[in-house]
Structures are given as C-alpha cells and as structure tokens.
Image (cartoon, rainbow, N blue to C red; front, side, top):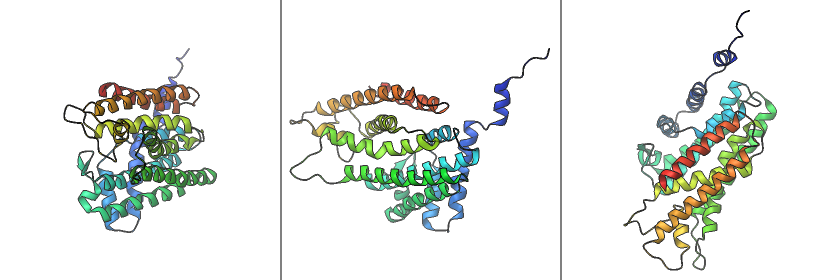
Length: 297
C-alpha cells in the first residue's frame, strides 16, 4: 500500500509562503505609486517604501484575509493597511521632527516638511486606491469604510497628543493612555478585522502595549534622564507627580512597563477566541512585545 501523501508539503507547494506574500505586498505598493502621476510626493513615497519596515500590520492583515479572500485581494487589503500606517509615520515624523527612521533619513528631513506632508496625504489616497482593487465588492466596500473610520480615529488620537494643554489643566496618566491607545490601536484593529472578525478590545490592548514600548525607545532612562519632554508619552507619567524629583523618570518608566504587561495579558486572553491562522500571528506579535518589555525592564 502506497504511503499517504504529505499534505503539508502539498500545501506548501500550492500556497505562497508568508515571505512570498509580503513581497507581493511590497511590489503592489510600489506599482500602485508608480501608476499615479509623477510628482515630488511620489518620489518621496517611493523613497520611504525603500527604507523597509517590519510590515507587522501587513502580516496581521494577510492572516486575517485568508479567512475570506483570495491571494490577490488579500495582498490589496494588506497594502491598504500598510499605506495608511506609513502615512501616519510620515506625518508623525514631521510633528516630532525626527531626522531618522529605520536607519535612513525621514521623508521630511530629506525632502522638506511640505513635500513630506504631501507624501503622507498621497499615502492616504493610495490606501483607498488599494481597497478599490479588491474584486469582492462587499468586502471592498467594508474595508473602504473601515479605512475611513480608523484613519479618523488615528487623527483624533494624534491630535490629542499634540494639542497644547490649557494653563488650568495638565496631562494626566489617563490622558496619556487614552491618546496612546487611540492613535495606535485603530490601525491594528483595521488589519485584524480584514477577515471580518470583530476585535476592538484585542486591538486596543495590543496597540497600547506596542505604543508604550515605542515611546520607551524614544526616552532614555538613566542618571541624567530626569526630564521627559512632550509629545513623547512618558511626559504624562512624569507630570503626574506633584513634586518632580530625579527619580520620577524611572518611576514613570516602570509604571509604563506595568501597563504593557497588563495590556499583553488582556490581549492573550482575548486572542483565545480568534480563528486560525490569525490567532497564531497575534500570538507571535504578543510574544515579540513581551520579549521587548523584558529587555526594557
């Protein structure tokens, strides 16, 4: 009797690997930009894509999309998520005056703030353009609506962080956590829900942990790090103390890590009800964040 075929090998031969799909996403994004009218914003956008990135949202979107979309539509949906995310990065770098990202000059540092602003706007348009290429009309409409809703939530969260507090009111810890969650969670939620699975509490937990750890990267803690500047998130934690002491920065840092661990614990519990292969991709992200938190402790 012949041996039974190895179904895993057959599946591997038929289905693209994760890296194959991520390459398709990268090519899709570049091709979509090239199809637009030539402009300084297009040139800057192509430069930004060449600087790379973890494509975390694309990975989540691809895993989620596999629940109801074919490969080409999954790639388009993941590309829409990445365009929206990268638009927020380009705009964020202008606000923070960050000169480098991923080891390369930021778009505003290389092309100027005005062209960078246009480039971020171009990426917003590209996200919606990507969604229109999805063949499944109902899904395309749902994703387009989600793009608009989640983009608006991110803009609201970012504006909370950047708005100047009134003289009678300083930022509190709760303000920081609210702004942090609102500016990061929506784009994670967008990626996870591509497959049609509601996930807001899970996305909010992951987004909070992800953004706090990102803020910690921006804020060195040590004997000379007694001042925490806005708009970076630790400012709120530091400002929460009524009397500022040299130890307050470390206190704020440790409190941030406690919030990270609590958020990841919530995410892991919520992920137990998520379908595969999405649950595995979420677990991988959660484990990465947990490892980063341990290294930061």
